[in-house]
Image (cartoon, rainbow, N blue to C red; front, side, top):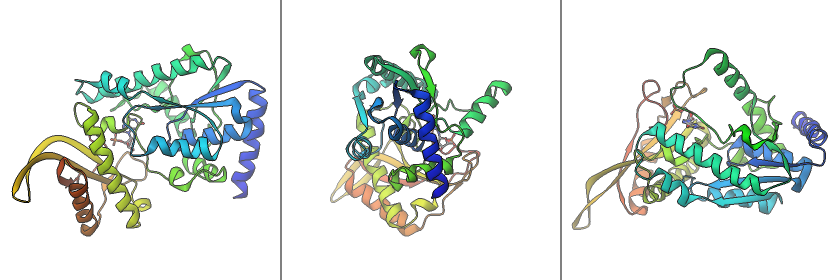
Amino acid sequence: DWIMGNYAEEAVAKIREQVGDEEVILGLSGGVDSSVAAALIHRAIGTRLTCVFVDNGLLRKNEREQVRETFEKNMGLRLVVVDAVDRFMNALAGVTDPEQKRKIIGREFVEVFQEEAAKITNAKWLAQGTIYPDVIESAGAKTKKAKTIKSHHNVGGLPETLHLKLLEPLRDLFKDEVRELGIELGLPAEMVYRHPFPGPGLGVRILGEVKREYADLLREADAIFIEELRNAGLYDKVSQAFVVFLPVKSVGVMGDGRTYEWVVSLRSVQTTDFMTAHWSHLPYELLGKVSNRIINEVRGINRVVYDVSGKPPATIEWE
Ligand code: XMP
């Protein structure tokens, strides 16, 4: 696309001019915005960009490997992967309140990122994948003191204590333009067109206390649901789809015996703005297949339900 091609060239020139010969760090979440920002800045300044990816134990199946593959292996980008799983799990142990969980996950991320940033002693710039709607939203929040129903924090919002200059090359772009730019820069379509994933990740899809065991089961179940949606050609037709782990056990039968295992819920919604949403009318055959596969393949789950609640009054996520 020639428009985004031009945009990329201009943006690259602007980044080079702004940054000069200084170094840049960026917190890469694997989401669209930070990924496109990373690819763009990497094109402009190569290895003078270092990206930090934090594995908090709440990522989707294979997410860490996919980020390594795309950015490190295929793009030659300088990437630091931090395994902070123990740290996040310890911080979350015993915590059941959703807002508390969000705050802990956000706080741990900032701390881990700061520790890594401190090691990159030459960095003068902090890059962020801020896009135009974020700019508007935070301006609105300042003037109107908007009440947030949930504290939505992305990987952004890092504190000023880092003493770095801000580099935000996507500030003028809408989401669909960011996606086009991502394709132009050679990012895989599956990454660029992936459903939104909340900053706290699986942390808000495991109801109540987060445990490693729950996260492992949820990752497997979620991957099956997404795979079957893709196979049915429906992934791009729904706005967001995922599995929720319910810390509830129910009775089942297997062979001659009884089982007493966990329950998960499938969630899939249609929406344009994520402020209101309808549940997706997925084909029964698909729901049946996903349920069978999860129960047969994920040892520890013996019941699958489907969430048929709209927003409002329900939210898209369960926490
Ligand atoms: P809800 O659940 O409020 O979600 O209907 C609306 C959209 O926002 C996403 N979401 C979050 N994103 N941090 C994020 O970055 C969060 O804490 C968070 N909570 C919800 C949700 O996935 C949906 O797309």
